[in-house]
Length: 247
Ligand SMILES: O=C(O)CCC(=O)C(=O)O
Image (cartoon, rainbow, N blue to C red; front, side):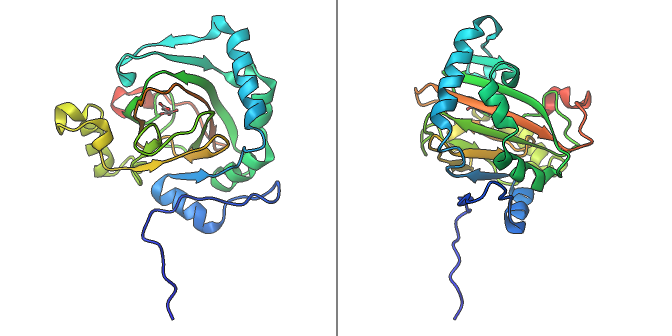
């Protein structure tokens, strides 16, 4: 008898029983093909302490907060704490955590390096974009993001277009022309662009290829997040990626 397979896109929900669980070959294949994975509950035990560290850092380093208002967020307020690992020992420790290391090293090799980190308070949504500003689109890198607030489907779940990280594909280039301002090009709201919504609870982690098109709808809730970008051994911050065409 044939085993019945699920037709839905799987969200990777691993049981992390040891400190050294990397990704299986199938999970790596899924990441390479579609550009993302959800790691359910990976930081469940840590999230409360990390939330405290996050709030303390924003209080202590008020002068470092970048108050950013930009069309990417419909000109609603976003506060950015750049280089969060230099300001919070707890979050710095997390960037070296063996659980993250096991996952990142299966994708980038054991000699990967941290190439960026930030923390954010979003009182806004984020339109469709990639994260290629200041990053090299021809090298291997991964971004890890987690939120301290739940992200719900139909509200502020993290949205991705599976497979859109293949940046030399015609489809990636067509997305670039069409979904930044889909009201103008398709007469569609950002929430109506076909995508995978990834619901998250505090403690869940999303890992994605920075070339992947992604977005978050604003549903009135403030979201706090931390993100890390890791590059492979040869990763260099590249000039070419500052091309606004790649945003
Ligand atoms: O939560 C958000 O509004 C967007 C997060 C995001 O797009 C990112 O960190 O790259």
